[in-house]
Length: 226
Image (tube, rainbow, N blue to C red; front, side):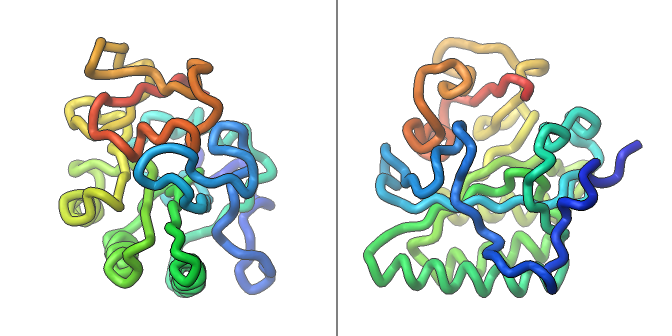
């Protein structure tokens, strides 16, 4: 059983890493580098992404443990969780949020391109930053469940209840929860209730031209397996 990424050399040593941890999108799906949200209440927001090390930071109950789409991302810069990582990450967020606010702008951070919320304390620190910066917004997905990671799950639930308009993290592969995003293997489209990701259907150019995942609580989103 795999326990980390298959691309071990892509895990970056923070002491030797000269770049920002938060990246501008480069994939077609997320939007070209430098793009902003083009639709909805966050129109104009700058988008950044964060990539952790898959499997190391993920719950073992994830249904895509073996066929994680990280298997197809050899060039991604991956980071391991922990105190050093968190100190650097949240200092960087402070700087970016303050700089954006001075311009009257919002930030939207995509969590996580790879990896997941690996601890309760990590989630709580995100909450502290949402309190500190009212222009900070988070969008993403998590495979954390109440059964496998009860403390982290409770922290994520708290975030969703208390920052509904700015913490748009959908529960992955949990179709019993309305605010979820599920694999096509476990959920099928239902008119008005569950739809396939519009970008994957060729109905929109990118996440930044769609905004559905963070803009609406319905319908549930279905993702085709990468």
